[in-house]
Every structure is written in C-alpha cells, then in structure tokens.
Length: 138
Image (cartoon, rainbow, N blue to C red; front, side, top):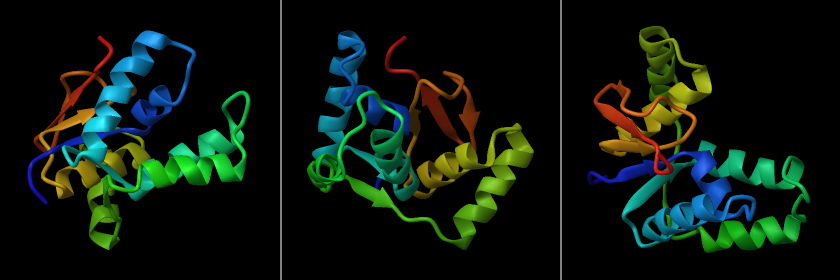
C-alpha cells in the first residue's frame, strides 16, 4: 500500500456521533478522505466501530443501520490482520508499553505504510515504529 494516514476507531465514532458538532465535522472530513482513498483503517477498527454502535452508543443502532453505515465505509482500504501483525503488536506492546490492541493499530498502520495515525486515544506526537500519532481535535 502507498503512504497514507490511518484512522483509529474513535475518529469513525466521532463522525457518527452528534454529541460534539465540532469533532463530528472534523471526523467527517477525515472519513470522507478515507472513502476517497486517502486514508486507511484496519479490520479491527471496523469491527470495534460496529461493536460500539451496536452495544455502547446511546441510543444503540440496529443491525440494519450498522450494515448501512459499514456499506458507506466500504470503499475505505482495510488492512487485514495476520500472524505477522499479531507478532508486531506484541513487539509494540513490549517496546512502548501500550495495550495489545493499540499495538494492533500501530502494526496495521505500519503495514499500510502510513506516516500518521489520526486518534484522540493515543498520545499526540508519539511515534511508534516510525508512525506518528496526531489528534485531529487539538
């Protein structure tokens, strides 16, 4: 894959949450760029996003609503995990002290050749294996 930026789950959630209109607008712009092929996500990000919509947001979305949203996101390039990514996530955990699933995000971004992870959950400015985190809302 070419060098693009990576979207973390929280950015997708902000795009589909009317709670903070400023964040929603910024996140929506990033998601639009992703649909246009400028940013990537991972299968993990898509799965976490669907799970939160089904189980944690208030009000929760119906399965049909979630399927429609996932269909809208369909054009986004998705990094699919494999054994090497799991191993790299373990290395990220060991090297940076991050949670394993955050390590999977780092490994997916690295695999996709990304220079940046857009996230408000990681430390802005932190670099993981050459991939730098940026908070689009700060």
